[in-house]
Amino acid sequence: MASLTLLRQHSKLADPHEQLRILNARSQQPSFDEQLQKQQLPVLHATTIETLQLNLGKLCNMTCEHCHVDAGPDRREIMSAETAQFCLQAFEHPGFQTLDLTGGAPEMNPQFKSLVIAARKLNRRVIDRCNLTILLAPGFQDLPQFLADHHVEIVASLPCYLQENTDAQRGDGAFNKSIQALQKLNSLGYGVPDSGLKLTLVYNPVGFSLPPDQSELEAAYRRELKQRFEIEFTNLITITNMPISRFLSELIQQGRFEAYMERLVNAFNPATVSELMCRSILSVDWQGYLYDCDFNQMLSLPVSVPERKHIRDFDYQDLVNRKIITGQHCYGCTAGAGSSCGGALS
Image (cartoon, rainbow, N blue to C red; front, side, top):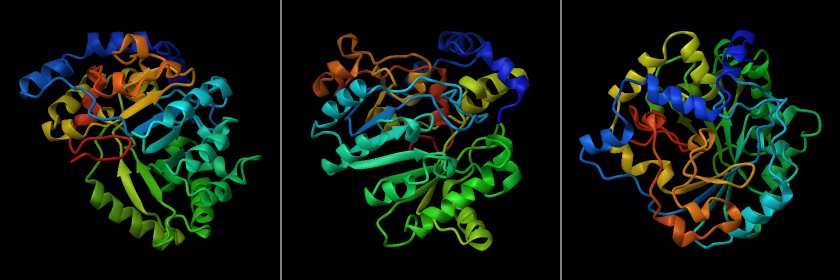
């Protein structure tokens, strides 16, 4: 769990507009759009909309230090049944292939199961971005079987295969609970070859470094989890810690914000730009407002189409070629091998 000092520090940065002000004022680096121009790359536009990513709310059973959503047990923002229905109506458009459910702990939203069932009836891919520990929480123990029955892909956070590093980021006891949850998922077939049940693990750095090589890290995870716990998984993805919300607070408190931003900018990789997730995803917040990605959502940077800012006003053609709203945080997705909800980009 995040330390009391960091939580106090973070309370000053709860306003997304204040976070934006800091990102723009304290980063001494060129703007992201200026970087694109410098690299002779075009202004970012969406190229398709294949994924509808729903943030079902900020309620969570955990309070992780790296969480860019600022989620936790004390949050009460959750998507309503009415907004969820608007999302399903939009998702019926044939351009969509994937419903991506995130949070907070998305499973804590009462609409979670009905969203899964409706999306699977459309024969679409469904992803549950799961913190693992929720699968052991009282009232949620039926979730693993439900997810398996509906062939939901699980994307699960596990910052390290070592207890000390995982608990440092996610709270005491998080590692052991995560291992128990993974063993339960394995028993249902998740991560087991030829089962059809996909289990993806997510690594994000503990500290201020960029993620290591994704394929090499996956091999290490596979070896260590198999030897220590007989755990199998489908694949591993790496995600860079974004300089927003709690991680931004930590950077500032430790006097490392400028250095971290410089690290991201110096590691800018032009080859990642064509694969950025914002070019094929539409992000919806718990109130139904639309964003280019989950990170823009947390900074209150809505889509660039004024008449289509809410899911009830969804129009695929108006949004599919929209200009992407960028900021200094976008360097986090283009540093090194790149970073997205699907892991490394190059």
